[in-house]
Length: 201
Image (cartoon, rainbow, N blue to C red; front, side, top):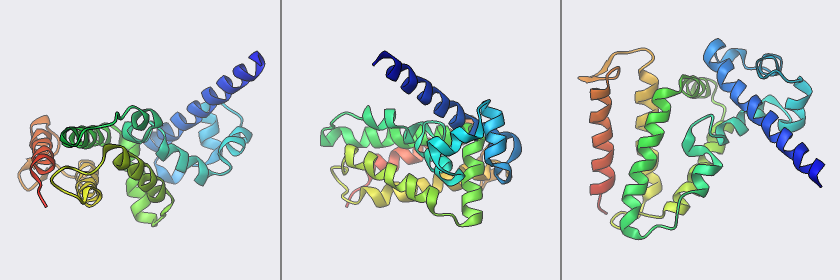
Protein backbone atom coordinates (compact mmCIF):
# COMPACT_ATOMS: atom_id res chain seq x y z
CA UNK A 1 0.00 0.00 0.00
CA UNK A 2 2.88 2.37 0.83
CA UNK A 3 4.51 1.55 -2.53
CA UNK A 4 1.26 2.45 -4.34
CA UNK A 5 1.23 5.87 -2.61
CA UNK A 6 4.85 6.50 -3.63
CA UNK A 7 4.10 5.48 -7.24
CA UNK A 8 1.07 7.77 -7.34
CA UNK A 9 3.06 10.65 -5.88
CA UNK A 10 5.86 10.08 -8.41
CA UNK A 11 3.33 9.91 -11.27
CA UNK A 12 1.72 13.19 -10.18
CA UNK A 13 5.13 14.84 -9.83
CA UNK A 14 6.13 13.68 -13.32
CA UNK A 15 2.83 14.86 -14.82
CA UNK A 16 3.33 18.25 -13.17
CA UNK A 17 6.86 18.52 -14.62
CA UNK A 18 5.52 17.70 -18.09
CA UNK A 19 2.71 20.28 -17.84
CA UNK A 20 5.18 22.93 -16.63
CA UNK A 21 7.44 22.06 -19.57
CA UNK A 22 4.59 22.80 -22.02
CA UNK A 23 4.51 26.42 -20.84
CA UNK A 24 8.30 26.68 -20.98
CA UNK A 25 8.41 25.33 -24.54
CA UNK A 26 5.68 27.71 -25.72
CA UNK A 27 7.36 30.69 -24.05
CA UNK A 28 10.87 29.92 -25.32
CA UNK A 29 10.16 28.42 -28.76
CA UNK A 30 6.57 29.32 -29.69
CA UNK A 31 3.56 27.09 -30.24
CA UNK A 32 4.84 25.72 -33.55
CA UNK A 33 7.61 23.89 -31.63
CA UNK A 34 5.24 22.16 -29.22
CA UNK A 35 5.97 18.47 -29.72
CA UNK A 36 6.59 15.37 -27.66
CA UNK A 37 10.39 15.31 -28.10
CA UNK A 38 11.04 18.91 -27.02
CA UNK A 39 8.55 18.77 -24.14
CA UNK A 40 10.08 15.51 -22.87
CA UNK A 41 13.59 16.95 -23.11
CA UNK A 42 12.53 20.16 -21.32
CA UNK A 43 10.79 18.16 -18.56
CA UNK A 44 13.70 15.73 -18.29
CA UNK A 45 11.50 12.68 -18.82
CA UNK A 46 11.17 9.88 -21.34
CA UNK A 47 8.67 10.76 -24.09
CA UNK A 48 6.92 7.44 -23.48
CA UNK A 49 5.57 8.96 -20.26
CA UNK A 50 3.81 11.71 -22.21
CA UNK A 51 1.92 9.09 -24.21
CA UNK A 52 1.25 7.04 -21.07
CA UNK A 53 -0.16 9.92 -19.04
CA UNK A 54 -1.72 12.09 -21.79
CA UNK A 55 -2.12 9.74 -24.83
CA UNK A 56 -1.15 12.41 -27.38
CA UNK A 57 0.04 16.00 -27.77
CA UNK A 58 -3.62 17.05 -28.08
CA UNK A 59 -4.39 15.26 -24.80
CA UNK A 60 -1.41 16.97 -23.19
CA UNK A 61 -2.53 20.40 -24.42
CA UNK A 62 -6.06 19.79 -23.16
CA UNK A 63 -4.70 18.84 -19.73
CA UNK A 64 -2.46 21.91 -19.80
CA UNK A 65 -5.56 24.10 -20.21
CA UNK A 66 -7.16 22.36 -17.22
CA UNK A 67 -4.06 22.79 -15.08
CA UNK A 68 -3.00 25.78 -13.01
CA UNK A 69 -0.12 26.24 -15.48
CA UNK A 70 -2.51 27.73 -18.07
CA UNK A 71 -4.26 30.11 -15.69
CA UNK A 72 -4.71 29.68 -11.96
CA UNK A 73 -8.49 30.02 -12.40
CA UNK A 74 -8.65 26.81 -14.49
CA UNK A 75 -6.97 24.66 -11.82
CA UNK A 76 -8.92 22.07 -9.85
CA UNK A 77 -7.73 23.67 -6.61
CA UNK A 78 -9.21 27.04 -7.58
CA UNK A 79 -12.57 25.47 -8.40
CA UNK A 80 -12.61 23.26 -5.29
CA UNK A 81 -11.89 26.27 -3.05
CA UNK A 82 -14.92 28.27 -4.21
CA UNK A 83 -17.24 28.14 -1.19
CA UNK A 84 -21.02 28.01 -1.24
CA UNK A 85 -21.97 31.63 -1.83
CA UNK A 86 -24.95 33.68 -0.73
CA UNK A 87 -26.50 35.69 -3.60
CA UNK A 88 -25.04 38.94 -2.26
CA UNK A 89 -21.51 37.40 -2.27
CA UNK A 90 -21.58 36.29 -5.89
CA UNK A 91 -20.66 39.64 -7.47
CA UNK A 92 -17.47 39.90 -5.43
CA UNK A 93 -16.57 36.26 -6.21
CA UNK A 94 -17.14 36.81 -9.93
CA UNK A 95 -15.11 40.03 -9.88
CA UNK A 96 -12.27 38.24 -8.04
CA UNK A 97 -12.37 35.50 -10.68
CA UNK A 98 -12.17 37.92 -13.62
CA UNK A 99 -9.45 40.03 -11.98
CA UNK A 100 -7.33 36.92 -11.29
CA UNK A 101 -7.91 35.73 -14.85
CA UNK A 102 -6.79 39.12 -16.19
CA UNK A 103 -3.70 39.12 -13.98
CA UNK A 104 -2.79 35.57 -15.05
CA UNK A 105 -3.03 36.44 -18.75
CA UNK A 106 -0.94 39.56 -18.28
CA UNK A 107 1.78 37.54 -16.55
CA UNK A 108 1.73 34.37 -18.66
CA UNK A 109 3.08 34.90 -22.15
CA UNK A 110 2.80 31.15 -22.86
CA UNK A 111 -0.96 31.32 -22.29
CA UNK A 112 -1.30 34.33 -24.59
CA UNK A 113 0.78 32.55 -27.25
CA UNK A 114 -1.40 29.46 -26.93
CA UNK A 115 -4.57 31.55 -27.33
CA UNK A 116 -3.14 33.22 -30.43
CA UNK A 117 -2.19 29.80 -31.85
CA UNK A 118 -5.66 28.42 -31.10
CA UNK A 119 -7.35 31.34 -32.87
CA UNK A 120 -5.01 30.99 -35.85
CA UNK A 121 -5.49 27.22 -36.24
CA UNK A 122 -9.18 27.09 -35.38
CA UNK A 123 -8.64 24.13 -33.01
CA UNK A 124 -11.67 23.82 -30.76
CA UNK A 125 -10.16 21.25 -28.39
CA UNK A 126 -8.74 23.91 -26.06
CA UNK A 127 -11.94 25.98 -26.20
CA UNK A 128 -13.95 22.89 -25.26
CA UNK A 129 -11.72 22.28 -22.23
CA UNK A 130 -11.93 25.96 -21.18
CA UNK A 131 -15.73 25.96 -21.61
CA UNK A 132 -16.08 22.89 -19.37
CA UNK A 133 -13.94 24.50 -16.67
CA UNK A 134 -15.84 27.81 -16.94
CA UNK A 135 -19.18 26.00 -16.63
CA UNK A 136 -18.01 24.30 -13.41
CA UNK A 137 -16.86 27.63 -11.97
CA UNK A 138 -20.09 29.43 -12.86
CA UNK A 139 -22.17 26.60 -11.40
CA UNK A 140 -20.28 27.00 -8.12
CA UNK A 141 -20.55 30.81 -8.08
CA UNK A 142 -24.17 30.93 -9.25
CA UNK A 143 -26.04 33.69 -11.09
CA UNK A 144 -25.71 37.26 -9.94
CA UNK A 145 -28.72 38.37 -7.88
CA UNK A 146 -29.70 41.18 -10.28
CA UNK A 147 -28.65 39.57 -13.55
CA UNK A 148 -29.64 36.08 -14.64
CA UNK A 149 -27.40 35.49 -17.70
CA UNK A 150 -24.06 35.32 -15.93
CA UNK A 151 -22.51 33.00 -18.53
CA UNK A 152 -23.12 35.59 -21.31
CA UNK A 153 -21.60 38.29 -19.11
CA UNK A 154 -18.50 36.17 -18.40
CA UNK A 155 -18.18 35.26 -22.09
CA UNK A 156 -18.24 38.94 -23.04
CA UNK A 157 -15.72 39.97 -20.36
CA UNK A 158 -13.43 37.01 -21.15
CA UNK A 159 -13.36 37.88 -24.85
CA UNK A 160 -12.36 41.46 -24.00
CA UNK A 161 -9.67 40.26 -21.60
CA UNK A 162 -8.33 37.80 -24.21
CA UNK A 163 -8.09 40.48 -26.88
CA UNK A 164 -6.58 43.18 -24.69
CA UNK A 165 -3.96 40.95 -23.10
CA UNK A 166 -2.95 39.42 -26.45
CA UNK A 167 -2.71 42.97 -27.84
CA UNK A 168 0.00 43.86 -25.29
CA UNK A 169 2.45 41.72 -27.26
CA UNK A 170 2.24 43.93 -30.36
CA UNK A 171 0.83 47.33 -29.42
CA UNK A 172 1.41 50.00 -26.80
CA UNK A 173 -2.07 51.48 -26.47
CA UNK A 174 -5.71 50.79 -27.15
CA UNK A 175 -7.25 54.22 -27.74
CA UNK A 176 -5.64 56.02 -24.77
CA UNK A 177 -5.29 53.00 -22.45
CA UNK A 178 -1.60 52.21 -22.00
CA UNK A 179 -1.35 48.41 -22.18
CA UNK A 180 2.21 48.50 -20.85
CA UNK A 181 1.49 50.36 -17.61
CA UNK A 182 -0.14 49.35 -14.34
CA UNK A 183 -2.21 52.55 -14.51
CA UNK A 184 -3.70 51.48 -17.84
CA UNK A 185 -4.62 48.05 -16.49
CA UNK A 186 -6.07 49.54 -13.30
CA UNK A 187 -8.52 51.43 -15.52
CA UNK A 188 -9.59 48.12 -17.09
CA UNK A 189 -9.84 46.43 -13.68
CA UNK A 190 -12.16 49.21 -12.45
CA UNK A 191 -14.39 48.86 -15.53
CA UNK A 192 -14.66 45.07 -15.03
CA UNK A 193 -15.66 45.61 -11.39
CA UNK A 194 -18.25 48.27 -12.31
CA UNK A 195 -19.81 46.08 -14.98
CA UNK A 196 -20.09 43.06 -12.67
CA UNK A 197 -21.31 44.95 -9.61
CA UNK A 198 -23.72 47.31 -11.40
CA UNK A 199 -25.29 45.14 -14.12
CA UNK A 200 -29.06 44.67 -13.98
CA UNK A 201 -31.58 42.64 -16.00
